Image 1 (tube, rainbow over the protein chains, first blue to last red):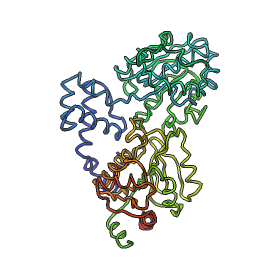
Image 2: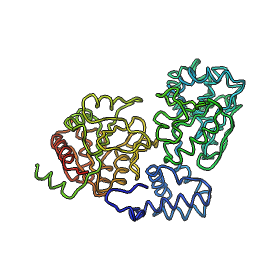
Image 3: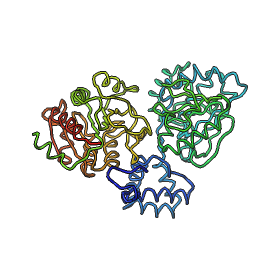
Image 4: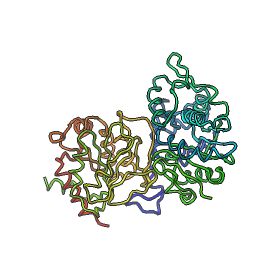
Length: 286
Length: 202
């Protein structure tokens, strides 16, 4: 941790507030007890979410929350819903999907079979978006998609493929801007307030519990899409994740990140080239 | 006025400035930063609410009019002196303890993402008393709690005079939540920034 102005470096922790100490201890407790590793997550965002959880669970302090989750696995699972951010939308940033369609899939279609890893898939919106894209390009049948997340509740939602009907207007607009070739409503059945997505989109999707902080890689992937996940990591953990991606990707494989994410500050910046800088699509250098 | 300004700066070292605004903010910020020199010694982090913009051209727009370097803040980028940073659209912007930026997709706050409260609260955590927080014109209560956090951490809080602001809702919301250190007209806030720059020793 860098020193703040005016504080002598020989007292590295003299400046930590009680809350900062509690937050660090909570992350340690979670890691030791449940093996979820939030220790290298971005501090400000973790702090906001833990403080929200403290309020929601009616605790007086983070320390009280820590004591409770150590003895109550169900409560920890509820806390996990605060610590992960299930914010996603289908065809989010349509330009990203348009670039995949126009610049990445033409190269990927030269392979007899494809492996795609959606890392941090949350509740699955991106997985279904990719599956639709692959179907329209005639590639879905020969593709295996690994869709991973650390949050089992999000993964369950992703498996079900049921999204609020109220979101379909936005998703339809995104889909069209992304160069979609059909009526978006062809892909789901509306029932009550929900849109149930076509099950056949998921035939080759494996949803799995996986942590970029503690687990290792899926081998020989052709494309990894990891969007708005790295922003929650500090540089050290970003490097770990990008290292996993580099190891996982096949020769000249593709990596897609979130629209404001970058590899410029990473040890791996020299190991990838930008294919589409604006849409944050990179390619592993040979 | 001048005397009060100098008084409020006594025994203060300002290491960073955060500025928030919504409606009317582009014009206000152009006026505010217009005379700042190319080698201004303090980083300035600006957040303007822009409706439904995927791609913000704010940095380009301001660079066109200003001499100091302007750029969009990037995730995990180290904050450099003498740069005017804009929060990118669609993401919350925070400042970490290690004085790097971070982005986040947490839910909008006060219908806003980026939200001024989140930027100012994290900046107050990171810089404590060495922070100057400025809230300008706007039609939203975002920023009131953030500016309160700046003041509570020992930093200097400044609100644009509501009588002068294009939309007075944002400054009034901040003033009614907690009386800021200074309520100033834009020209005086500009003078404050210039004075700070001249006094900054490094």
